[in-house]
Amino acid sequence: MKDNGWKGIITLVIVTVIAFGVILGANYFGRGTDKETEQSVAGEQKEIDINSFGNVDPAIQSAYRILDEQGNAGGYKVVTKTKGYGGDLLLELVFDKNGDTITRMEVLEHNETEGLGALIKEPAFLEQFKNVPLPVTLKNAAAEPELPAEGTAFEDGTYTVEADQPDYNGYRNTMKLTITDGKMTEIIWDALDAEGKSKRVLSDNGEYVMTESGPTWKEQAEALAAAVIENQSTDFLSPDDQGKTDAVAGVSISITDFVTLVKQCLVQAAGTQMEGAQTADAAGSEDLTGSADAAGSADSGRGTTVDGVSGATISSRAVIEGIDKGYTFIKNYLGTLS
Amino acid sequence: MTERYPMVPAAFVIIFCSGTLKEALAAGILTIVLTVAASVLHELMCKAGVPEWSRIPSLLIGETALSYAAGRIAYSYVGGLTFDRGRMLVWLILGVLMACSFLWGKMHIDIDAVLFPMAVVYGLWMAAGLLRELLAYGEIFGRAFLEGGYLAKAFQSPIIGFLTAGVILGIANAVTNETSEERGSLLSILPAAALAVPIQLFSKWQPVNWILGILLVGVLVLSVRNRLNYSWTGKRMRGLPIELISTGLIYMVLTVVK
Image (cartoon, rainbow over all chains, first blue to last red; front, top):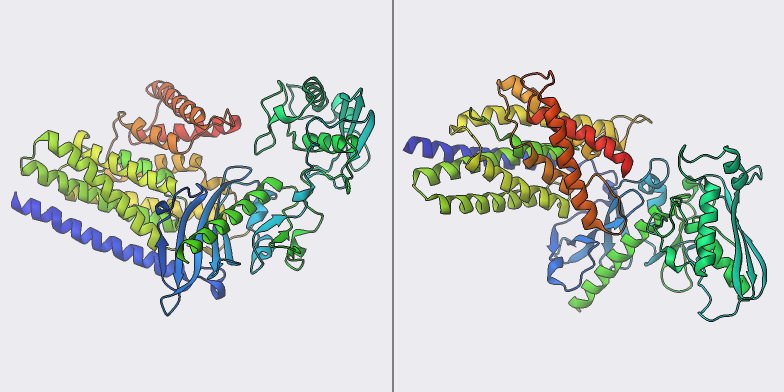
């Protein structure tokens, strides 16, 4: 029996030694596969205990100090988790020693759509964030209009807005909103394809089909419009991260564009000046391959504006959110050290 | 009939840790360490006459702590692996399942009898990790080998995780002349369903999604199990392997709802 007891312990020791060897080997062989070896994280990393800080944003998964040869903090690494279009998005961010710029960035994990949101992994998109002043914002992010203050009188009339750019399906959204006696009485949401054909007409004719059963696009647009007219507001719609709402029965399409266009019309009706109509997900017309050259332009104030992935605003915003949360964490951390 | 290797914990960890060769390498060897540790601890406590009321919590707590520590050390050290909240839960649950296998399962008492089947599982696990990484990213150990439109990130999804676990256990059973009991499959499937929720019916009420997902998977697996009793499956695939494959197919269907 003693032999059996010792046999088990010896076996455990041997297996543990083998395990260490395997893990050391995995780390050794995996080290040379970093694609950006000239920017690879060098130096020892000391983990920062994020749990010791109160009210840390739940997006922060882990954080490390990267020590230089003298043992001082030469930089910081933060892993963030944000909600993308298809699921969680894990980012690894390496900041400089002052936490002012990103020296390296990698998308560790994502569930975004291939050919669209998945393009956030491409070097052409990620290069925009390197060594630029933080924080970063998406171009056209400021285009989301603010509703006029409550109690603002709307001028009677018919207001139209049209998007500058088509969405990723190739349809350019339009909106016609009628105000009578200071209230919304008619909302017509439509979209035109490259040939100028109306999505309402196409869905009526059965040429634009989303599902075989279920309401057509036109029926859903009209249901949305009727709900907004009844409530005289868009606040009740509360679209989620994917632009969907549970507030109107039978509506399963993304309503982000609809809400933005209604707001733009109301801004016009309130007499507020606007620069121009834009769709909610028009993220610029630049080809991704060119965006490495057209790196984000620095604001006149702090931070940098960058191009999002065309047709993947939610994915792009998730990346921006991860960067900003990592940046905020590092700045707060550095603040505790001073 | 005694089990020669802890199938339920192995199945659970394979579902989540067989996406890349690097992770399969690290997770596999750690699972072997945890198996040997649980066996040694359990045997020592039994021989020392430790009463059951003490032995059970001791093994549960000790194995869970060991599992968490091993996972954290390995994942923090090996570059490219992230020990996020999801992985932490995987390794904690693995520790609990491993302890349960030795406390209430029919594990073989001889450590030699356990090592060979675990080695077979480990080899198959690494092969599966290599294949999944190649098909998902076109890479092996982070080095690019393939490029093309046929590469699909879906090979990293829990669907393939379940299918992989089922196939690995089936082949391991065939090689080691082992069979698996029907009991215990839910012990690996339900925690996996909790960590990889298959449906998102409500965008705002995540706890409701979580509970519904677990219940739905549990009910569907149990109903499939009844059908499988009357089907002609190979002796080595019966029980846990075929139920894992069935769960993968159930996930495939539920993905449409998501």
